[in-house]
Length: 118
Length: 205
Image (cartoon, rainbow over all chains, first blue to last red; front, side):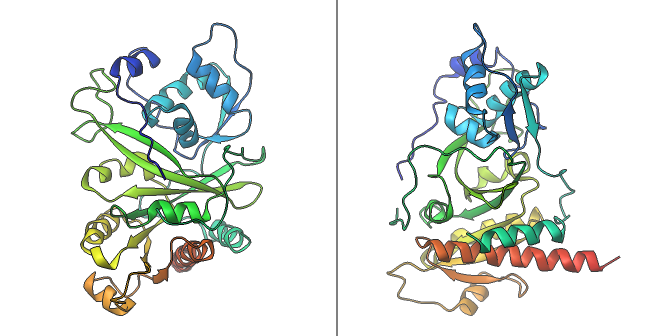
């Protein structure tokens, strides 16, 4: 596959996208699924509008980052804006466990079942 | 990269509206070992590529402002996706094993189900560091040996286990990362292992 680097070559662009902010909302996991609750509105920042269009169906944070060509942290900041104004909802993965904990066996059984059925 | 056995749609197909739980599995291995090939062989979407920015201190984006300051560096990774059922979606991340990547582990891969260390017997040294780091992060893992056509040496799994000083409880499996069924078997080996660990943990009060 041809590796297409994400365009991070222009710091000014990223700075503008986030209005200079650099602290992201860490509650968004890579695989948190985002769903739009409303459509884009006129005058909305284009990245916000793109996220709302993309998330008409559930879309993982990491997929949004790939589609927008933006680093994960920047996407987390933008998602924080949209969550704050009620334009998206977030379906988080099961509560983050302590590092050594395993997911419960019932969940793993479902995963196994899904893989066998592929 | 290797040939594929399935044609993936050009457009990224959306998930079903009932999808609610995202899960993560990480495939770690050195450059050229076949991580993307493995992701591609089992993924329902064409592997996508994304990046995360980090400062050299490894604490994420610089607090003092510039998102891409001069000291920042990026770590790129590929990923693919498998819809397991109407609710659960498994994301597979192909991650480079190099040092700077591990600084991002907690921010990106906390809560990951487990990992696959993909090994190329011609460059076994690349795997050492990944195994060490996974043990450090207490992430359960299995080792998959990608058998290339020209893998004539054919070290046995036992020989490889010895070479990697791998404890007996870590499962090992041969695979051909280009073949979908083989990729599936690797994932099933991992989740079987996780299931056994979980059952053992639940049996201990």
